[in-house]
Image 1 (cartoon, rainbow, N blue to C red):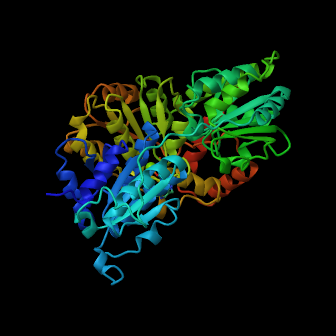
Image 2 (image 1 turned 45 degrees about the horizontal axis):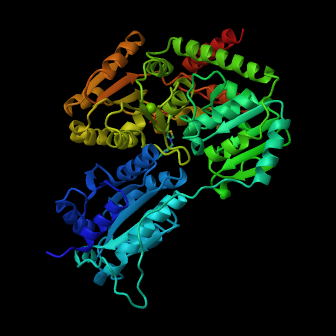
Image 3 (image 1 turned 90 degrees about the horizontal axis):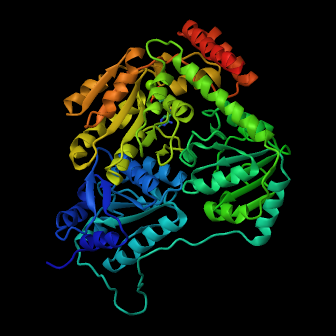
Length: 597
Ligand SMILES: Cc1ncc(C[n+]2csc(CCOP(=O)(O)OP(=O)(O)O)c2C)c(N)n1
Ligand SMILES: [Mg+2]
């Protein structure tokens, strides 16, 4: 049998180094599924069947985040393609290279109001605006694949190819005829080297050398530049705050790392930004201006590989467009070591006090379990090389504040879209990409009910493929959409609206057992550490269900008068849990008072 378009498309992806495609079938892509089933020489990418196309897109994004490679997902026409979208936006907003391949109805029927016919080019035009194309002719496939992959990598974005189902079965045209109107592309991409000009580096060094109190803020663009970030911080006597996606840039045991920044951030990061006279931002587009210095307070230098991303968060004096590691290295030679280390010492003192406070907060009693305790105990026993994923929700607060990453660990979440749902699928992608590394997903019960429960089925299906089966899904069973409940209280001044916020209970651990995974349910604070020990040595994927108290406030590092007013209006306005909230908030704040002394 001659090679079909479907065969050729997969083989071309293999040439691009794609060895795994996350997806879900449908008759819009049966020509591609047939090609997967013919993968006789073992070189074709493998099809990984998940429970929902959105999960496939999250997994493609997670793959990109944890490998730096292209992630690929696949879905059928109409409904399948539509399901992909949220996961694709997650990838787009976090700048991950992901290619989506979707089916379409047969060419002859298009425009005929045919079943499942959706205008997919228009639908994908925003999420894949750098490159979305529908194939009409077998001779296009070669350059459509080449361009979709190359553009995704070069622009660190999402691209999409739409392939009508009848075209998938047509004979492949690996080499278009050499004539007018054909395209002859080749595979391969090598990243460019981007370093700012000497002049720009000199100007940046002048600003940084003149400062007396330098703050650094690093984001995911600095992942892989940890050595350079710490060397520059050392020279400048700076403290380093980390945006959420940059949590893995530097380990948290360095005394000058102030941890996360923002609403989910730490007090030392807040103090660092309030007190600095110079800001050096590396590979971050951290959005919340109130957590950055006030305009005019600090002189600024920013480094970003993407010229579109500089100067948009703070009016920087010098914007350096360049690779983080290379640019920092080029800067280093121009920086003078700051001999006055008092600013650095002040930061280190704050950081030490902060970690004491975090421990104190984690130890406060709650009903039944203080969620911070769960994260604190995990943090103490994170195995070497662990990969962490967090969902959106209160887990992201505790992940950001309480978890101390050590050298060599990786962590991610939906940083920019902040969507619910990626915790479990990211963890699955991490496990496929690094089967030998332990993976822990930190997920709320809302996110579990939204999709995590279903993806446990995928874990059960594939777990035996992983050389080390340690994949732990921590579920915070607080029967509440807690993050938003707190937002209703602290931002809107509204009492908790039980109609939208209360969640039904679900037996997460028992369900895991039904699937052949290990289920551990813990509702006693004294059992938390033992539960983690058990989970980390189970030798099989585990769902660790912790029954946690929704009234422990995810306190921001700095409470504004507005937020305090909103909170009191929520409590006076008849919040159903007012008394417990007051008690818990008091406990958490009192912990701070003692730590501050
Ligand atoms: C897809 C999506 N829907 C809604 C939201 C708004 N949202 C953010 S966090 C959250 C609550 C999450 O609840 P849960 O998973 O139970 O975690 P908890 O905060 O209770 O720990 C909601 C509804 C969102 N970010 N994404
Ligand atoms: Mg919840």
